[in-house]
Length: 330
Image (tube, rainbow, N blue to C red; front, side, top):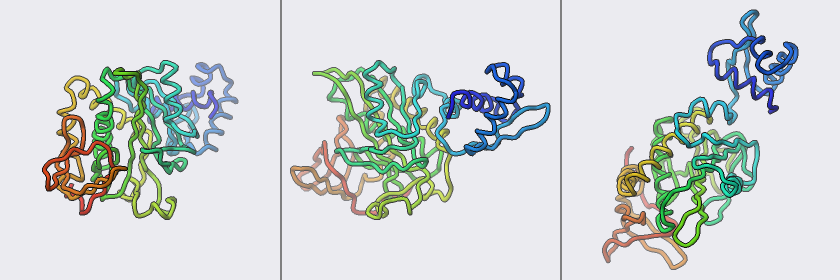
């Protein structure tokens, strides 16, 4: 979208349900009334419903579900998260863009969000299905003053923040699966990926990525994924506007991040355990060294999953987890 149309759109969004006069738009942007009308018509062709009323001006009636920086900002109540924001139409990976931005000096809380990823990736280098206009593909830059050894806790922290936001905004029974997935009725709805750059015991920055399936229908999934994944719209039976949802996620992430920095991991661990969908269930943990089966009992102080086996409680630091029974009631 052109810069002038973005400015006109921002003025109408700021007005909310009120009209903004063509004269005001002309004066602020240095345009003729005819040029304003042409930009309004172009916005209409892009899917925006705009009411025009003589002697009142223009009013935005309906916004197509596009990720709009102005709409995100309008709904933000954060101190720093999302205040520096890049919204893109398509990108290889928001993680790659965020890494570059972080190296250029982006502030903590800067976020990269795209309508589409052509090379989205998840944990262990797996690809992530990121169709256009249907999900939230987002990467957030953090600069935590923590040792590198504690960095894995950030994934668990983020899973708590995003779960709280999704529960609040959708009323769906979102649950956490260790270490980095969010599930609804045992199907994956969100994946979280944390990548860091640092040296010795110092973290330079962390890029926290989240891929959330929002308005994706079953028919859009590759056949091999349809029994394993879901979306918010599939589970709720309705669609969701993504820009306000992004603002809510950034708000909860900032809250939980500040809590983590000031109070440490212990309070995050308790909240994670409350929101978990695997505790008390038999699970199998698989890694290159083999597999282990036991009952998931909680997290230790480092964030490792504690499995109760015949030999007692065993911490699992890195593994793929599969659960063997139904999630407990929400």
